[in-house]
Image 1 (cartoon, rainbow, N blue to C red):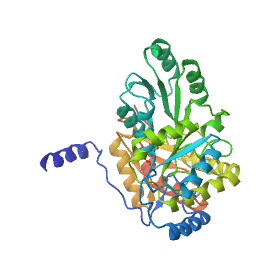
Image 2 (image 1 turned 30 degrees about the vertical axis):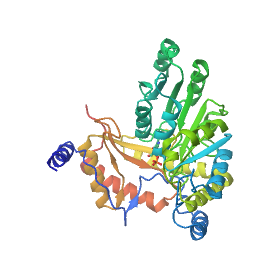
Image 3 (image 1 turned 90 degrees about the vertical axis):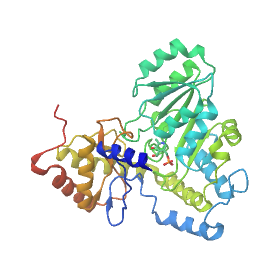
Image 4 (image 1 turned 120 degrees about the vertical axis):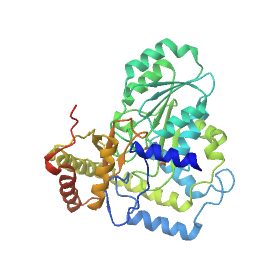
Length: 384
Ligand SMILES: Cc1ncc(COP(=O)(O)O)c(C=O)c1O
């Protein structure tokens, strides 16, 4: 179809064309496998054992015949890990957000959403039909001001935020948001995709990081695909909340459940974090510090907030693409992130820390970054 070709050309002209890249034979420095659990021998061994026993897929949705003892045990393990009464699984983080948010608020309700929230939250908000107020990134003053003037006009109210922002690595002030929710009778929805296994002294996430106790108004969503090394997602909260989602969340009800061997592998991942969480988190911070030293030593423009996401800021979409391609030729993969994943003119290389890296890997990274980015003594600092 001609119009599709034209649309693709238009995207390409702006350096916004997207292509999937085969990552065979390349050193990956941008995955979300922060703790290296994806290939942990114990995780794989458990998962393979269950794969042989239960088969490749689950065969049906959770409400038909796709809910096994492994799904139940994973939910219980997650609820215990997150210190929250109950948990329910979803097929992915995207499905969790687009299914849960519209179940909690609808017409006549209000959603307040951080402008840098993940696309799946944005789509969940759109699907909900609630009135939305998108506040500037972490501008909680403005959020409170808005609530003080408008809260009474709406029935239910939901404040939604990433806990660790996926493309910047900074952390939402959950303490402040928790207090705001108590004051203005709102629900607090936190997306812990990049917080679970990443922040908090033992890796439990945002509530642990801020020393907050779960209360019924808090909805804790998270993914199983990042630091936990598997696939899928969860929503933790009160028992009535999870029961309610099993009855209302369309992306849970009308979608095949996770394969049992994925659930089994994840139970093992969480066991490992429960046993070694403190040490793993310390090691992750150490790796971040090593990356920090490399980026600082090369005088690059980057962000760091004590999380494993350390974006190297490039700003220009075209330049980000070019640098990513040149690094690829040198055996390093760091994806160039461009609009609409980040705002226009804010393109970056999303470098991440992972316990998968050896000291030799880090040395290799340093050498290649120097070669590709610092060519002719140039660095990436914004010049305007
Ligand atoms: C903050 C956030 N929420 C949700 C998701 C979606 O999770 P999933 O990849 O499991 O669909 C992501 C994934 O990148 C994310 O970064």
